[in-house]
Length: 441
Image (cartoon, rainbow, N blue to C red):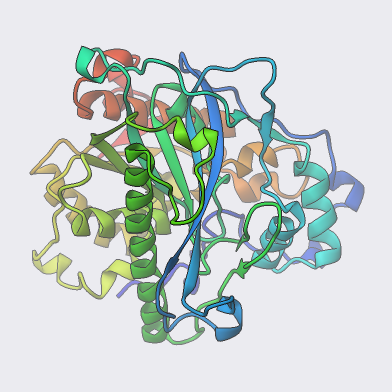
């Protein structure tokens, strides 16, 4: 079995760069605080709105959880937190959303703790740099009267993407991808997982019911597998909770019993197209996507895997090399960073799985040249001017070019896959076959 990336020589932080000793880094605190970073604008024909949705549900405590971290009014009450990115009609009254979720200190501390940075450094630097950084999405903006479909029967509806983050991420970490997809006519629901794989997760504004990052057992591969496997199954249950929430939202019901709908939530009634739902994710989120597509076979039209991390899937799939490869029977787009493709131990397990699915459906597999694992998140763009971190976040490729290549490939795949929707998306056939910056497998 391949080692977890947490314990192998190919250490992954899934969102943040490889760990660096603070004492040996040749920068001053002042060099950490350049101008406030900016993310690229979205390219689609729609402006983008966003809204954070929270609700609670009942679920028993899981073995990987620590009792003190789930203490609420009732131990089995769980909270879900998601961010919707969606096509919008924007007026002068709306304001853009901040990249760092609220409360910003909780998430700044979470990112720092995840990287084992001292809090005297992580909180002021992350808050100082990123609390003024906005995404190009407007808070609770109005949904347009008509959507992207050419079919008159669906002209008021929007296809849906559910997105799952990787280790150390949260609901805003991939805003460059989620917002771009939304600008082309999709409602994208980014889950903030509460299994201890987010850098931190807290109820918006209040900071209540905070779940911090949970570290796996060390020097025990089997124990780590059981730990990660438990988290993976918990994540799948959160995807199922999200599906139910979106269905309630579309039916005009309260997303939580006893909790009145907001005006922002009400506008989604009868606007979501559940015949065109896409499951997507990065790294552990890509593993979540694989497991979800195998569990919820009839609900999703296709999947998108960004640098899929196979560790938590591996025990169940130990016969992959022997030919007993699990299949999804769905079109799946896989985009690897060159760093992940070069990680032979993982790639040798991943490739038979992808090849088996390509025999059954249209499932392209691409590698972005000169890119690293974090090039599929916002971080290389946000920190590209920070001395000492630029090379930790990104490969040699320009971070905006890397995100653009990922987005172009995703949009072309959706053009080829989502029913009655392709004509709306830009035709970019070259990206899946002849783009010189991509390796086609």
